[in-house]
Image 1 (cartoon, rainbow, N blue to C red):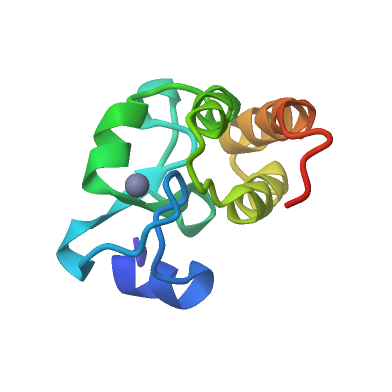
Image 2 (image 1 turned 120 degrees about the horizontal axis):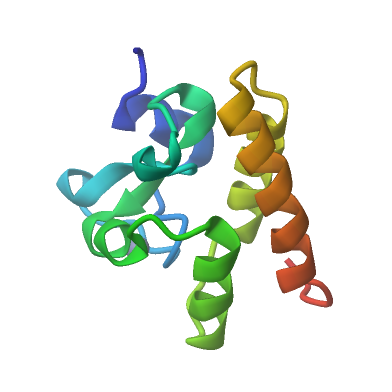
Amino acid sequence: MGVTVESLIERDGPACVWCGRAPWRRDLTLEHVVPRARGGHLTPDNAVLACRRCNRRRGARPVDAVVRELLRDGADVRVATLRTALERLSASERRVHREAGRRQLERLESSVAGRRR
Ligand SMILES: [Zn+2]
């Protein structure tokens, strides 16, 4: 409902949250922060942009686990965008989003503790 790649480009910029690249428009996809497989819905508060490759690669893993792996690989993860997305989710009116958002935000903070970003 009202979630489009264009609206997210406007909100977050045209980059993939996982690798930081700004691919061609057709390669940007809507990424569920809380995956559908974990009860996430496609709402603006649960959506960010990811390139096709990263979206596939992420699967249904929690944000913090993917971020840890990508940082280890030296990827230019958009930590600030993901943090903002999780903060937004933490205030969601949907319980599934809210609880997952809070949990993952906490774990994200300990994953990136000490990093300047
Ligand atoms: Zn990517």
